[in-house]
Image (cartoon, rainbow, N blue to C red; front, side, top):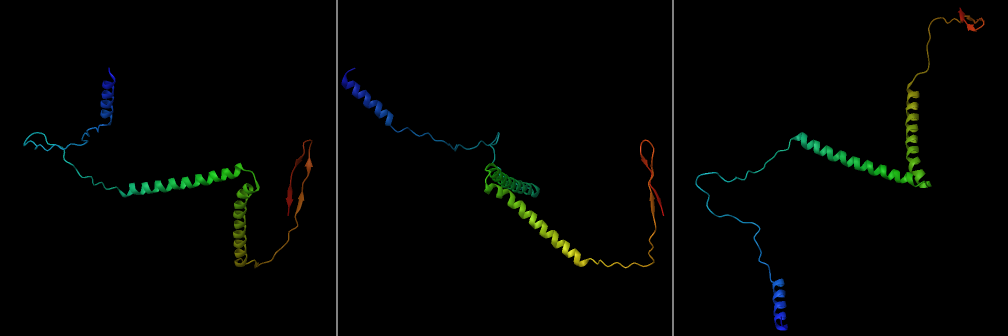
Length: 154
């Protein structure tokens, strides 16, 4: 092959490489008329679904439970991060909420006790004679193996 033929062949190859490709259609509408008899083509049927109330409620509840689990999981993850770093901050991170709950519980308990104390009457009224009985307790222990018999006499 001569130099002139090689240059011509190279130009042809380059021109073929940069020539625009003919675009093929991706959709085609058949405009031929339908037959008067025979099988009929499919008919589009509109989709009007109505979701039952229980299904919608279940879906909303599922989303809520999922979001709550994500929040609880993030809280547990943060708490575990606090446990992993044993510093003063992590110790306070754990103990301060517990101490706060204990303080609130103590305050509520003392408030309830003081309310109870103001509404309860402690004065008792007894009627009738009161007698003190003389009671004696006799506990003899006898035998090789000690047996105690309690005898209560009025």
